Length: 292
Length: 174
Image (cartoon, rainbow over the protein chains, first blue to last red):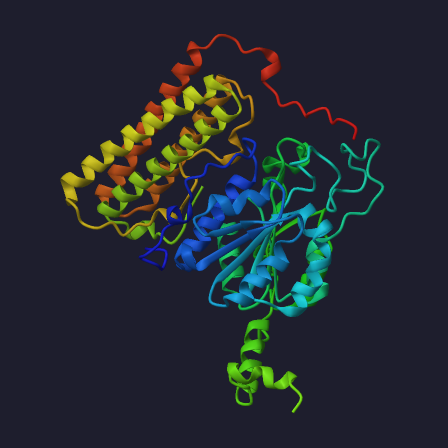
């Protein structure tokens, strides 16, 4: 009847800093989901590094007791990778919004996937730049009226789920604050996945979001992938379901590689062990550069 | 509202009391968060009401804690708060910036209804007579709480019609 750990509870990951999101924001539930997931994992807060970019959702590391780095716009993933390389024993999480992750930080995604570092990336996708007062974001629907698309957007939105699957990510999931227990479980599974894991969370913006994007509407739209009998080991089936992003709200794990390949950290360790046999001791390294 | 990993059919009285304490505690914490949100958005009437709910949930939690101590002393609890998801606590989307006191009260009332449904379903699912009686008592208490919130609503004057609905912000051209 316990959550599997006797040591940590969700409250242990909650910092004294109170969130300053707009009342009703989906991110309040997301941070609760993260607390629950971390409690289920059971790593102490000082062994966790939480990196974010810029935006409303990027405030999230400050609301946890983990080490936090509220970095620069779109750069959470490179910084998270650096942290993981410097201290592979840390549990590293990255988070941010759709603008931060898929626009200014979009170029980092394929490289993050191909490197396959053991990092969980949580995106709070609200289809708008909320912090800067409602501009068109990369996931805003075509035709959407925003501060920067007064007559409706002419652009096709990106499909983050399909992107990640096409890049070859080993874990791709989607959640929503409409189901806190389900969201916490998905985040937990993403953290436990040995490799890069991506979770897209449909987290509505109450201030600039449209009525059809709010929690009430999401509750009506949400369909769990389990209820569809989806096999999360089937990548092509995952891509088929992911192609409905923006039209349907599928919740759950789209794809989880049943045979996870070695992570970048594993390969680096292997390479270090291989080369260490022939490595020069530190006092002789300069010899390589000195002509005899 | 969700509770995971609990087999209600096998629930003991001590676990049931611990569960009830945690449910009150979750609601108290949520109302504290809501009061803070209302302070930040300069909505003192709603903040005041949410603080009133904090007091109520604290009081209810203390009553159940006392009952638990009388029956089971300080025996360690086996129910984790991490198993509970929004049982009596209002959902996070229940608040809005600049919500009126009436809207705050309606959010609380809706949560009291939610808690009533939960205890009714729980009472029907358990097998132990003492646990069933406890859940039925708690279910009936939720009716008292509903009446209390309804009494607060009745004390209010009519709302300004402009505060009853959300209005999307007028997006400023960039």
